[in-house]
Image (cartoon, rainbow, N blue to C red):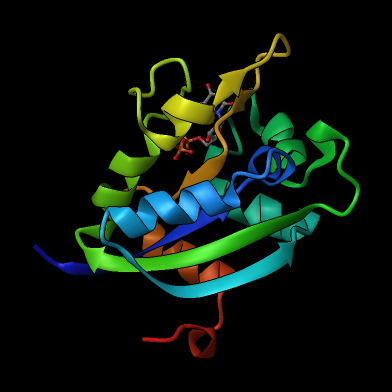
Length: 151
Ligand code: TYD
């Protein structure tokens, strides 16, 4: 077991559907500690950097629109970013969040409870949570300054 930090984003569908409180509650109940939180207007540049690894995927341009709120017609593209800390937090938070495809996400996970796929084909899965490997550290660096984390 290792002490880890991981990035969580409340995506525009999660914001629009007022799910922030529920996400915080579930992560609290799972025993993770919030060490960073802020409201962020997601610029085109930030969105493209965040999803850089997926730039060759056919759904990439929709993903950029989605994370910036354009997909949902939200003009101020405002989301909430969190850093959570805990033992094996990267894998543990992903477990609370559930599978990428909301149709495959287990019941009781955040995406299993609240995610959806619309007829447009976009996965609307409420939250982002860092994946395994170097991803979490890289993403935390992208979204937060070191002094914004309280540990
Ligand atoms: P990915 O990083 O593979 O998943 P996760 O968010 O679970 O780490 O994909 C990023 C986002 O891209 C995902 O949250 C939703 C979207 N996406 C689609 O819209 N369609 C797809 O087929 C995949 C794989 C992802």
